[in-house]
Amino acid sequence: MTISEPTARHPALGEPDAEANRQLTTLDGWRKSIEGPPVPPDLLPPGDLKRLSTSERDFYDDDRLDHHARMLVVATSFVEKTVVCGRRLVLLNRHAISARRGLMVSGLPGTGKTSAITQLGRAHELLDRARHPNVADRIPVLYITVPPAATARMVAAEFARFLGLPVRPRSNMTDIIEAVVGICTDTRTGLVLVDEIHNVSQVTRAGGEVSDTLKYFSERIPATFVYAGIGLETSELLAGTRGAQISGRFTLVPTRPFPYGAEWKGLVATMEETLPLHDHPPGTLPLHDHPPGTLIKLDRYLHDQTAGMIGALSHAIRGAAIDAILSGTERVTKEGLSAIPLDHAAETQKKPARKAPR
Picture 1 (tube, rainbow, N blue to C red):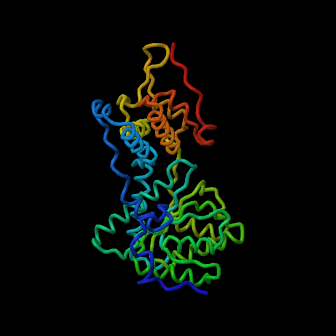
Picture 2 (spheres, rainbow, N blue to C red; picture 1 turned 135 degrees about the vertical axis):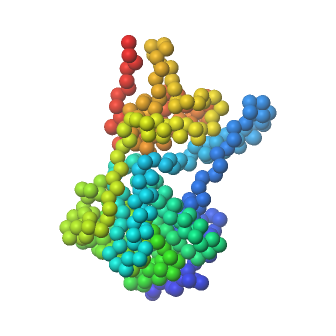
Picture 3 (tube, rainbow, N blue to C red; picture 1 turned 180 degrees about the horizontal axis):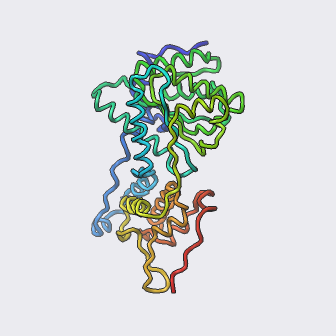
């Protein structure tokens, strides 16, 4: 059994199901992410708040809770660098027939790799839409993640799944690849984002076959390929002859935890501005701590607690804001932040609490 030809070229170009999943690894989910998050809910004046019925207050709070449940993407210097490098490579590859160059984004978990490449993809897609308004049959960006212990067929199936192509147990590998390449060529795919690429090991037979499959896709699809993963500089992705080929064609953009400084303070301030809380004082989360009269900035405390990881920072602030709504305190405090358990990496790297000067 082979993969069927796409309907009216392929089913992914049809009207998206309203209930389709919103994962980035599907075309419908990717397109929804491009639209950006909904407008943050407005805070009601105290008088209007008191006049709400119990059910109305529940709905009002639920809207604010849903807002805090969404990950905020902040235009950090790393995101900006990734977008600039990616756009440059897309332009350089525009007329390349073969040996197109790619981008590798590498770093520790929680340092913003996925956010960076998805922002690159968003910028590319919005530019493509602006250049081709009212054209629905283009797929400028394709996004997949590499599964653990992936095989070549599994990776090819991820390409097909994004495009909405059916992959049956008996589908021929060649047919899957040809269908994917045909659609990507017809719909002018210009950027392919491959996340979790650290799951590929060149020292295993299966990993080598995955690498070969990705290379074949990159040769057949006239697009710029972007890889993102953990510790790629020293990973088995770059081992051996295959790894040397990747090293020779891909530019590496490393990400690291943020140092405490102006950019970190700006990140905290930006996230604070998105908190629709009734009793939270503006500023950079200032706090009076012991001894009385000593002013401690929570941006420093947050850096110590999260080890400069932007993922842990977002989790801590949003989690504390959710607790503030549920508890009725309506403000983020040091106590509220300390009550939010972080990921294990941040917990093991965070610094001990600073003592106030005597």
